[in-house]
Length: 347
Image (tube, rainbow, N blue to C red; front, side, top):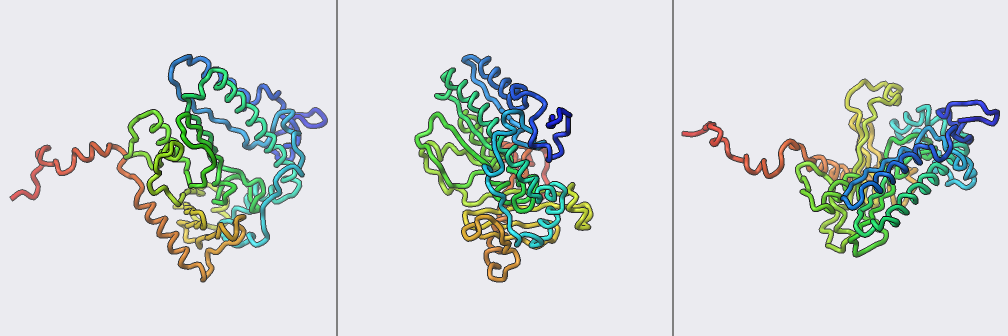
């Protein structure tokens, strides 16, 4: 970026997020990626096509081109969501609060500098997605184009005294998910739980392709948009974290090994289990929507924790592990050893 004196400075220093990127808006990553996407769509003519349009922004380094860098002031941003009760409440979360990025985002001046720039990057993305939608309109493609818009994760930006994207708070896990189905018989908001792993089976279903049940863990969402009965739709979502490479592990004195954590979330509760012997975490999402108060060691909530841990175990037990052959191949190969000339156990 270029500072007020015309000098080039590193965008990795978050203090510089208030300045514009050295490149013009029409040459930013977001603009370039959109240009390529539109060129691809226009070049397909009447041929069927699939496009994975993947944007890097909004993302660090938190540097936006003009005019997006100065589009918002700090008082136009959502206030930071954090509570003193969170400090020291759980050893893993406390260790992540000591990460350099978290320490930076615990400064009010960092929050007031980065959050407006981040919102500017979102507005830039909105603008260029609008260009994509306009292209679909101009080419009359909405009538037969399935569109899925989602994100891989959120960003703390100071929430819960943290930075970056690890751990399991809703500001990280609860990402946008919009499905535009040209054959939909219903449109609107749906509060049922979907997961990122639902993207692939939804696309396969829309294209009438084999669902690959030996590989795919997710579920097609078309039953939700086309008025078909969604039999026993899930009431729980899961997420997994591997934090082996974080400095938090070193500060906690934990040797290299299995450093995983898993989240189980329902409409009412969020439970986090760690593989390193750390205490569990539990949040009452009805009474504590901001997830400030950890009930992981509350005696009154032992039954809830046990039930959520059981949900985690059931999910683990259901994961698909024989992924090298299809279910049809497995069926054909069942109890067929004599065809291969193997006669063990025969009298």
